[in-house]
Structures are given as structure tokens and as C-alpha cells.
Length: 343
Image 1 (cartoon, helix red, strand yellow):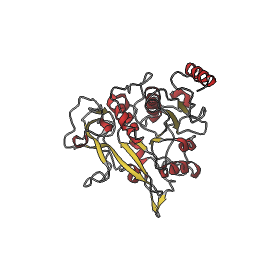
Image 2: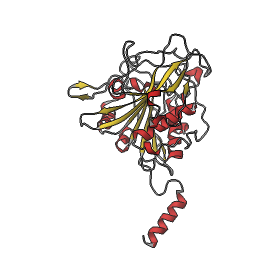
Image 3: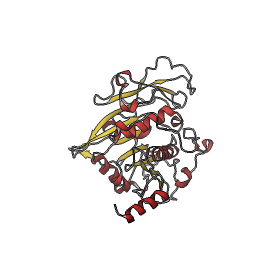
Image 4: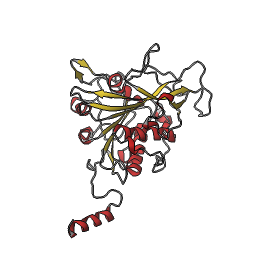
């Protein structure tokens, strides 16, 4: 290495002590948030996180996760949001069939082309052809997917994805299960998640002893059915009687899987690792076990499971005090805001 090269590297180390000279793969833009990865096992990997739902405050949860993944683990992260016509992040937007001809906009989906991992937290999203095509192209790429909570009913209406003439259902086919109802009491019963004993040694469960959140347990398969055979259940969720973490289990409500892995294969025959959790509201992510579970899943999805270190912090980088879940936007203080306000 010549003198000039050494000098440039030295100067770069002063200017960017945590990120070297590498630039973020997505340009800065007021329509989305970017987080440059520092030193860490995720260096050189790009994660796109999509917050596009109306109930569980994904617009607060995903920026927090992106900051943790970038600052504490080295991943470059980009957070995209559901936005209204004024360019504001707007979780109050209706969905179909509330408004039968509504179309949704998530600026920046074209950046899925440079993503190594998609983290999706959407609900009843109806995208126009040019936008949804970016999602479908990603699913054809063989790259991994993480689906959070409502992602298993993340699209509604326009999702023109077929393989061998058969329509692809994102929740059921890609994630391994779809929303079939609230097994726990909606907004009145919480969930205690514990590792599935049979799979306790799975890398995603490293450092995870329990997971608790005020979100209720979803049912994702028929009452007389089971989790799909090619899914590996990792966390089983017991409904609790109240929203208190010390509450007793709800009588006669059996625990159901709330986190699992599976594999998605598109028409090109490329296998993608998939992790899905039916927990994951912004309030759920106040729990360190929930953050650890999701961060570990990022490593596993990217084939970095040997780098999972339960001693590496998953604590929020800045104060994290998200709003509660629900649709009573005025009471909860949910209003459209510019993307920068969620950093």
C-alpha cells in the first residue's frame, strides 16, 4: 500500500471512526431514514425495514430497531414508511374495504434491489403495480425475509405474484401462516413467550429466556390444524389474563406458536430464509427478549448465525417510549408526521 493510500485511510478513519469510508447504499432523502452501520458483524450488509401498518406503531418500532442494528451491530439500515399525499408518515390511512379504491404509497421500495434483508411490518397494504413489483422482485431474489406481526396479512388487493399459475399468498405461502383471528384477548390480554424446548439450541434463541408483550396471541392456522410442516417453531406464546407481565395464564387458552422459521422458494428455485413473529408491536419491543429475538433472527436470516453474541447489546440507542397500540388515534396521540421525526 503506497503512502497516499495510507493517508486516505487514516483521514477516513478520523472522519468516520465507526464506519470507515464506506457510504450508505441508499442516498439521503427526506422521504426515508438511513442509518450507517458502524463496526460490527453486520458491516457491509444492507437491511431495508418497511413500516406500513395502522395499529401497532411500526413507525416507532422499526426506526428503533434500525438504530440498534446499525449502531450496535454494524448493519446499514434503511427505514421506509407508509405516507400520505403530503409526504407525511400516516398510520391513520384507511385500508380496503374501508375505502374500496384506496392506493397506498411507500416511497423508496426501489431500494429493495440493494437490500440483503427485508424486514416487513405492514397491514392490508395496497400498492400500485410499479411499487408492488419491487416487493415481488425481491421475493424472487432468494434473499431473506423477516415478517413482523401484521405482515402475515400485510397485503390486500393488488399482489400480482404467481408461480406456475398459482397465486402466491404472502402470509400463508411466504411466512408460513396467516391471520385467522385473535386467540388471545385483543388489547386486553398479553403474551408470555417461552422457547420451544425441542429447538432450544437454535441460534435465534441464543440469549433468549422469555419474551413478553402486551400484544395478544394470533391464531395462524385452523383450530383443528397445526403450524405448517416446513416451519420450525421457536417461541410458544401463552395468553395471559391481563396486560400485566405478572398476570396468570388465561384459563383454557392453550399456547400457540408466536415465532418460527421457514423457507421460501420463488419461481427461480432460490431458497430464502424466513423468520416470522406474530408478536412485535412497538410496545412489545420495550422487552429485551423481543429485541434479542429479532436481532438474532437478522443474523440467522443473513447466514451469520455463528456471529450471534448474546453479550452484544440490543438496548435502544436513544430513549424509546412508543405510543400504545390501537385505532383510537386522537386518544393515543397518533398524527401524521414527517419521517425525520421518527429518528
